Length: 243
Length: 243
DNA sequence: TCTGTGTTATGTCATATGTTAATGCATCAA
DNA sequence: TTGATGCATTAACATATGACATAACACAGA
Image (spheres, rainbow over the protein chains, first blue to last red):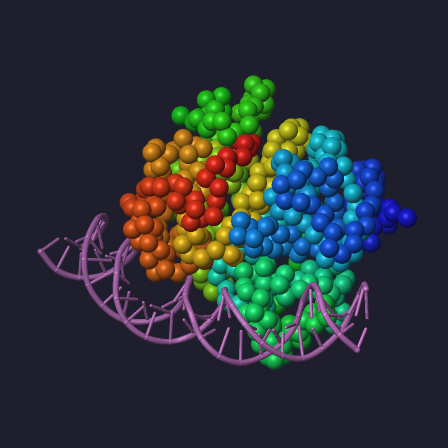
């Protein structure tokens, strides 16, 4: 029923740093099970201290903070291979919530084994820190995007980055990738209003750069979109560990 | 000449998790020296792979990214106790630059000893991951601030958080803390134009909330400022490790 | 003393974006 | 069928913020 780490559908992909058979064996024991969550399920709650940590195996979700004003800041989109709950693992509690937007399958790890991992398997501890540093990097990019770009560029940027993440996972076909979110989610991620997001999406559509309908994003002109986003079309994704 | 970890001026402060004598001894060996940098020195360069990692001991600086457009996104302000160069440590290269804005003293660690730290001292490896998670948390907050608040609230928020960080380090006296940055730095951190930042500072000054002159911030009415910032005046700082 | 440079300060005007409201269009359940 | 709900779409209007221009001030160097 549950996926064996030896047959992990993600690990063979070239974005992930390879693992020795012996290391894989350790992961098999670290993984305590698998969890399936419906769309809409809250996987982690801000302020809570989840006893379990996850790696997304299939499906998509999003991380978000709820602000005093009741508004919502989407921190990032959660895709397969993303590690969920590191903050709950090392600090007392989560600083953001995580929610599934499609049905999701998650590899489950026990929080109480985390310390054992640091003690017995420094390679994996190193990988965890790597992932934390990677997350910090991505958030820094998000900050720069929200802080310094206009609405059009922000959306173009988000589209390119989501497309590339999906492509690295083998989810892209002819520039089409699944994007099962609402316009409100994108707006909350980029610090735009829903209405302005909608108008800007129309702009991108009419300009022939990208169209996003029915939960599916079509990148019609990658180079054009990169131009709008201020990104280099030829930059390559960074190899990273998979826990 | 160089500060012995046993006499670290920062560690006794209550924000930092205490360390056993034996652990301190390990830190003494991990620290390879001390570095003094003038104001304006670039400590880490985006894209570079620094052979050394630092912990800020005295002085202040800032982390920033340089964007394609030539603009600058200030990621965070660097204060004593901040760890510098984690990304260079675990990933190939830094994703942002770090610059001193005052003369700074830094504790120096060798990057090539980082792996030994993970292997021989899992407690410290754990702490490093903690710091990475903390940084991720702070960046998430920054993102929410820049994404969802107006100029006035952003600046109030930044002031409160800087004040509280300084207070935890014992640098605050009667609501006055050192803030040796330019208005342009704050503007670049909050995604505002220099002109608008300046006008908003005047607004805060005239409103009796805070004044920032000559590199010194005076919080005149903490509760008022918290109100503008949408922060709870009674929240307490999180205890954290010091590397 | 003068001149240049960097920073803070202020006013005027333009505009990107937010706010509010209304409509259409699916889907779902009674 | 009907009504309710959630989401995308569009228009009309309001405003926070940016862009530009200019001045004042401090400081360093010749």
